[in-house]
Length: 169
Image (spheres, rainbow, N blue to C red):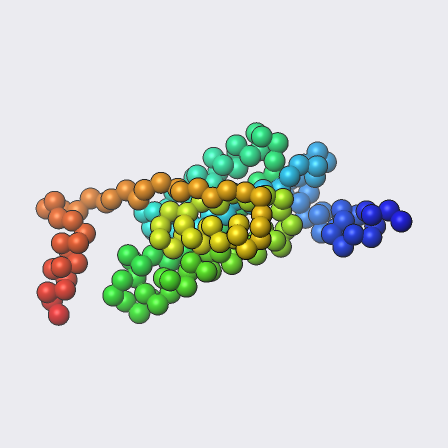
């Protein structure tokens, strides 16, 4: 019997499911290309990850140009720098595993062929690496670049602000 009909994830059995790709703009030739997960921990309010949406578009364009179909998997990320000293701090460390879980979920759930992940902080770097290890996927992880510092009045550094806040207690 033909494997196209007997394999659980065959394209024949997945025809109805794959029709959703057509609704997203895929053409006939796209179904013959490898699908590459782009794992991007992203938040627009963190200096170490706020540019990952733009970086993701550059990577997606490069993958398309190389003959692959990018599948973007954004993952939530919590900043310990922003939540420090607040009740929300308890969500920072678990966000590492949430990043890994989200990227793995998207990669495995859509049966992608390879994975490229990007990390940018102490939570998102390991969170972006873990899905590659967990799934034994063909792929790579990249560092998204150093966080750029903001501008502070009176030439004070962030640590100096925190010291002053600490003195209020």
